[in-house]
Length: 84
Image 1 (cartoon, helix red, strand yellow):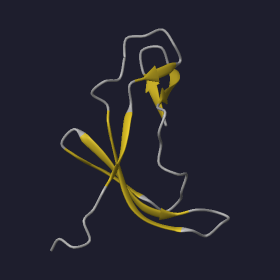
Image 2 (image 1 turned 90 degrees about the vertical axis):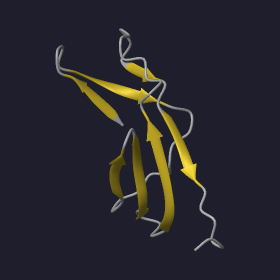
Image 3 (image 1 turned 30 degrees about the vertical axis):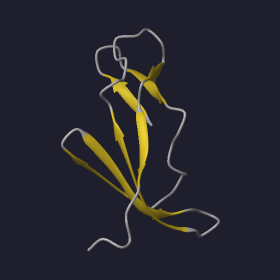
């Protein structure tokens, strides 16, 4: 995932140790300060994902001279299948 620095016109890459698996046909939406990455499929394996991941940008170090932006946090949302 990348962010465009519109003052310098440089693409900067977010750095995180944990990411959701690569996929296509997924939904990406935001609620409050969290961004949600929902479902999708993988190509060419044709695996279907029914998971939900969310990320937050609260700890990103925006004011760095590096091309990598540390601090992005991805978490897998654990759903309880027994709850209504």
